[in-house]
Image (cartoon, helix red, strand yellow):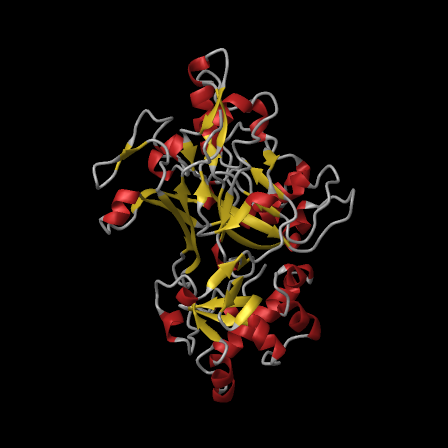
Length: 441
């Protein structure tokens, strides 16, 4: 999507906190979510602006925005699906109307009316913003794939199909939860030290995976493919994803058919959906392949995607252990990577997914897989960061972490920065690990 006046870095809002240079939610962002408050017991849609949220449902019901009747109706629903189904042009119309209404030069009478529908973000409960039907998780970082391959196959870390095929597995939509939900340590079959028989027990190698997820807007029909040039018209927005992983369960089950119970017990997502339009200033070229590497197959290539199919999204991961919480210590940064290092672009992922005629519904989610860079400090999971547990991370308390322990809180942040543009962010995706259910004899 192209830039327009909503991206103007000089825009200011009458919501003062939106003008802070470090806020995730300046007027140039305007991400969408869903919430409930003491005033509304049912879910309402909302927009983030500074440290406030604007109740979009109430605004629509009170006819305070100059948008089409279809958009107003979609804004009164408890999920974003109906709005997403209208397509990116409709979301652009809504963003432009919201931008004009929230600018510092908006009519004073409109400002006063909208103030009645503002809530402090810290005093409301954020909900899952999208009714998610299907979830697919990709494996789009060549650095992550190579690192994991080195652990499993040092002599041949990257399998030959990786540079041709955007690899993915089908996840479980039912266990996708909103940021802040506590995550119970899973039980599963574990075969440690290659013993003959596995044991059913709690995972001892629990991990996070820092990812970016993308929501499908307009649906496709059964048997319909998505040409690469049209792929982004089906992508509505993005969020942070933490695809929690039980590495010891995964090790035992991943052959011959890949991840199953090691992955589908929980996936956390951030509450805010940043539209593809808001990300327009932060487009970057697709991953540049070295000379001699295989060329992208024609169905996955377009000049537009090669030139600006990537996204410059910084992703940071922090940990706050139970001991750190008790001592009131700030979270400790584990890693800092960037989505621009992904081998496959979102458009390529979606096009490949649909290349066999697989149909998509509005609200389907596909995630990038672990976002990792060249260095250990850019690794998007502890499996890489602590290198299979062989190089534990030392924390300010003197504690060490190779994998996540009970009571640990994992915090993932994501944001976009570019000279001459306003910084925009995704907020946070958090989760605290709680003990497993007791395994019966």
